[in-house]
Image (cartoon, rainbow over all chains, first blue to last red; front, side, top):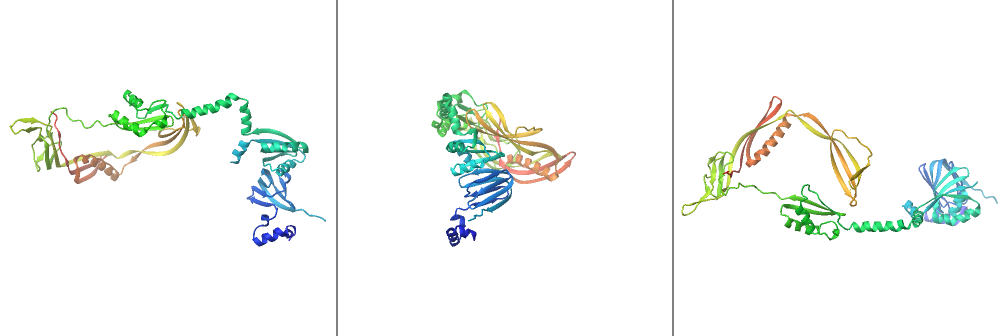
Length: 98
Length: 378
């Protein structure tokens, strides 16, 4: 519901073509490989980075990675790869107040 | 591949000291500069790597944003190039040396004869004459033509191979068989070399002394070494005939009740780098071998002086094993049959094996049909 509100055209196109909404909208995509490596596509920057916590901005939301010995393997304009012992990945919605 | 590209383009290690070092990461991401090896060492310190060109693009912005950045290392080909530019002799000498090495590798600088004991002066002279010598253009040596030419010039060899391996010409040789030795006499008789009944007989030269169906003993004359002319005079000849006979014999052979059996218990591969006449083991670093062992050496030559040698070591263990009667009989019978094959084709055979004090003994009786006769010694 929330997705359709923010990206109504992209959501409609994705529903019609039966493909993920990330094909049409600039939304982050998270790929977790086991508990050791994570890749985030279409990020909007790094908000916080410590070996225990990485917070990635993804437009209207944030992705929080918790773990131990976290290391950013590669950071590009659109992708980020991090490795380490990953204990949890959390999606934090950024509330927009009128 | 990415590492190779980064090394080619050059990359820097940067240490960021800032209350919010993530600002540097976001700046690089916004500018499209890929960052890798990011490591947070403490609360305000971040270490990261980025390409040399990307660092040059963001350096001024980093300074203006007030981010404390310190380059701790510069790596890659551009650094090497700038270092070499300060050493012009090395910069130009290295390619010249490489070019000379490549040019020199087009020629033969070493001629090696693989078969030991054949490095005689005639061979060396013939090799020089056919164009295989130090300094010869390697591609210009036609191995087939050289082999044929050498075989014509050196009849004492029946097989010659010329292999050009890099800058080395390897000559492999096989000496020609000397051929059968005949008695030096001008004439001789043909005599029986064993007892037998002659089943086929035709004189090729000389005068027949026997005929088909005759029984002969070892040493009997089969063909006399002369021919009679129409006027009655005798002319000495070297007697020869096609003579086939049936022969019988009873032989025996024996072996002990146990044999030494060699087994390969362990194999190990070792790698050596060979510089000229010196060899240095590459891997494994150490290994102690005791007892008996065989080695198989495989050598790959990179250049005239540099080679890599793979040595496969097969460790042997000799142990005493008891022989069964069947094994002993099979072994002895095979040896006896091999020897009996000298008599021709074996028609019938009988054998039995018995155990004596500390040994197996096989008694073998056979009938064979084959060629008979040898020149007598006068």
